[in-house]
Every structure is written in C-alpha cells, then in structure tokens.
Image (cartoon, rainbow, N blue to C red; front, top):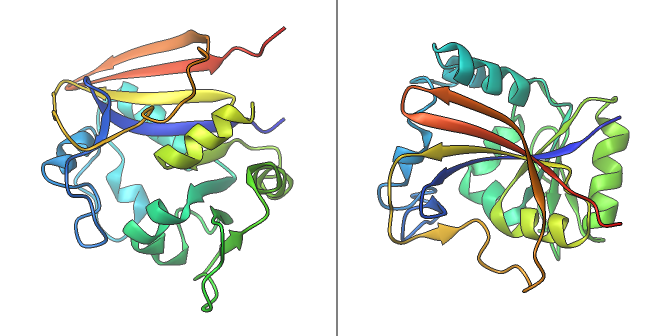
Length: 198
C-alpha cells in the first residue's frame, strides 16, 4: 500500500531554505548547501544520484516513488520541474486556485483539499510510495493525519534564517518513531514513522 513520505533536506536548526527564497533563487541565500549530499547533477534527475552507498539508497527510494505531491509555491519555485519530476510520474500540485494555464507535463492542479490530493496520488501511484515536497503541504498533510513517514537529510550546518519545516504546527505534539538512521559523508539520513493516535 502506498505511503506518503516527506523527503526533505534540512539544517540542524530546522531550515529547509536560506533567507530570501524566491522563484529566481528557490533555496534562498546559502540554501544550496542543504543539497550538498546529492551528486552534481544536470538535466536528468538521475544524474543527482550520490556516490556513497547510504545516500544512494535514499536517493533510489526517492526516485522509485510513483507520484509526487507538492504545494504550488514549491512547484513554482522549482520551475515545475518542467512537468517531469522523475520518470514521468504524476505530480499533484495542491493549491487554493489553479492558474489559467494548465500545469506542464505530468503535473495537475488539485484545488479541493489535501484529502483529495492524497487520494488522487495514491490512486495514480500504482502501490508505490508518494513523494511529498514543501513545508506548508507537509504541515497540512501532517495535521490531516495523512503523512506516513519523514525522510530527513540532516545537514551539519546552522543557517540561522530562512524557511523552517515545522514553523506553523499547532501546539499538540506529534509522536515520531525513528525507523532508520543512515550516516553518510556530510549528512545524516533520518527516517521517521508518524505514530497514529489510539
């Protein structure tokens, strides 16, 4: 059964971008540092595959997902991945209102809420996991009880400013279970299962 998994590179102080992120500078000032665990890359997403075994394992899992869910802000800052995040899998863009222009490539806009977005992604994923992108969308998914796991790439840096992953959560706490911890050069890969209540 498909799981919704958040894949996110993050600084030790909880930032997923540097300050002043924008369409022109998607990861903000010094935010590129958060993706240093990836290979140098190019036009082909597979070209970002790291050489070390632990990071390659995480990257391969990410690339094996059967659908992508992202928020519109993340989607636009990433240039919509030119309509193909990886392998032509469907991309579901959560938004309050769809723009007049249709989404590029395999992307589609979803305007009727996170529950519908997750249901559509699961139906399209063919039993494979679903890759989740974006802080606001991750928080919305977590609040709705629809986020199954978090795969965090913890980078050994303090950015001090930027966009935090968990900035806008309600005061109720969420229990996580560490299910995997992989050490790699310059990064620690932490995989957590979101514990369901009851």
